[in-house]
Length: 231
Image (cartoon, rainbow, N blue to C red):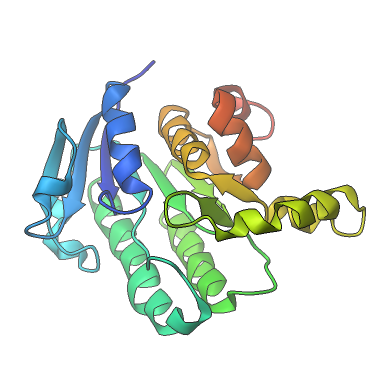
């Protein structure tokens, strides 16, 4: 397995705090962008980079020589009430990350977007869709876009109450596709999928939906990334 030098934004957050030790355990070198005073939150083996995730100029000089950039910054516990924050945080952070990664000559950009289309959270979906567009238009040789809907984990468990309904929806022809696209994934599945994304470079742009995230969380997806389905 090829080892990578990975730059991560949002490394102290919900997914990032689990992803960083997983990458280190796999032998990758990790640089994590943190706000001043948050260095202590990083796990052993991670190099801290002080900066503002919304301002590329504050950290772009520290991205090189990383070959992979993982963009995780976003508003915690998204809800319709946070629509303005999706534009000022999620969208702005993605643009800053793209600018810094492109300036540093990063080869592979990994972006956590959101399942789409969706009947709810339209402002959130719109902000993430704009993020996807920015990543695609930046011209990175390799791009992986992961599209989870809801990631179950500590403090994020209430959708488990919908599991019986999801089972029914996934078995009805009229609702099967939407139920699969907007399905639930666990935090361990998401972290494993991110690690697999870092380790398996796509040819061009690869979009990974919920069913693929679940499979990647079990066995990785190197063959899938390099096979005929890669774009």
